[in-house]
Image 1 (cartoon, rainbow, N blue to C red):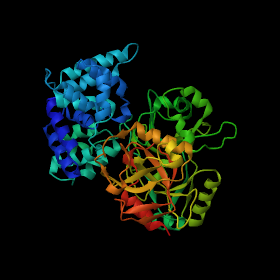
Image 2: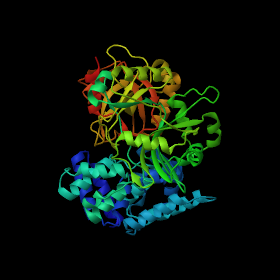
Image 3: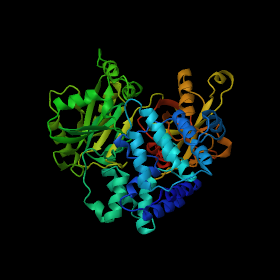
Image 4: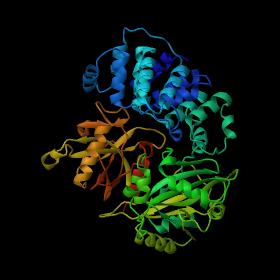
Length: 571
């Protein structure tokens, strides 16, 4: 396929707000793609060159892209900067500069390979080489193609969908409906690479997914927790359960073999280089040729051994000065599940057996890699007592796991249920906090004029399987001065001139500054009430910011269904 054809499809997708229409357009595009290029088309439609776990980064920010456009189209950097201030989109600027100039018609494969080469440039002089190669590539494209090739390295493709919509499109490509979505998603949850999944379907159809097995090095979509209001309901619903502490750390899936180690976040991002202390500990504390662990890393105070809050632990997620942070914030990794060991897929194995194998896989003398403590019970009183003990230790609460259940990747069923204690509960209280997407901010008045921000708008996902975001709260209190400054800084870094098309917002709630769905915050509230103004039809009463959830992406935000459940559970 010529890249110009792909650019036409990208333009259609950008101009379309309807989720069903986006799905149909994608399905037509995927149908036209060959099995050799369909994976690359999937990645490019997401503004990527590979899945997140591959760790491919361009390192081409706006300043460098301005130099690229200046060099490619023989205009001054100042003119490009002025146009950027006016339009807010370097892709559109590149498209306008390209009009009337000579052009070639490269294939998708050729453009993809050139972008790969640019991303892989390293070492002395690499920045200059990236600029030159990018400028040369833009000169070989048609104007519309320039728009999207400029946006991809900047992470601003602006199409407003994720892998979830591509799963729908693959089903639509095969059947003309979303009827096969669940079957395709189950395969994706075991092997979270949308390019591989699309390629298998193109080559073999759905039958190709039947034999899909765990592949070491490709993350499995983590299992998720459901909510129930109290210990009695948990035992009534689940029967015999294993009860474990709920750590306020960072979720890490470890892929271990003697030759290679991979650490992946709940977003499936590869963070192996950020945690060399865990990698080193694995060499000494694991008894297996290869294994996949699910667990939580949590920082602790070196002198007292006391666990640190999430906002401290997450400081370990960094690319620079890693050695210094290891000394300041050492970690313990609590493994609470084992998904694979020495060639054996354990996903369908009952949790009781997985736990037994896990206990034999981590050496008893381990210091850094630990088996998460647990108790097994069918009594609400014992569960409640264990919960209270964890709160006294400074942890969030507990997770109860059905003792005989399989591991359920990507699902929020009643095999895992969490019970948390709120930090400042009043009124009826909620059974949990909400992870909301920040949609924009309102400019400050009075004292807040100094910050430039007086409030911000947050939303939840409309559905588990799709991306539209519905507003649920306007938050103007409960933040420290430092948090207000941090919020404005974060929003300014991802602000957009116009309302992102995946946002459904009442015009009376439009913020002064919009931002892309890149910031996730944990919000606590006293209650949830019905709302005629918010598009979620629900509103948070006395909402307050608990923390920024840098370990979560927008597609992991709370859904409307979950918010409705919290509304029903309050009492």
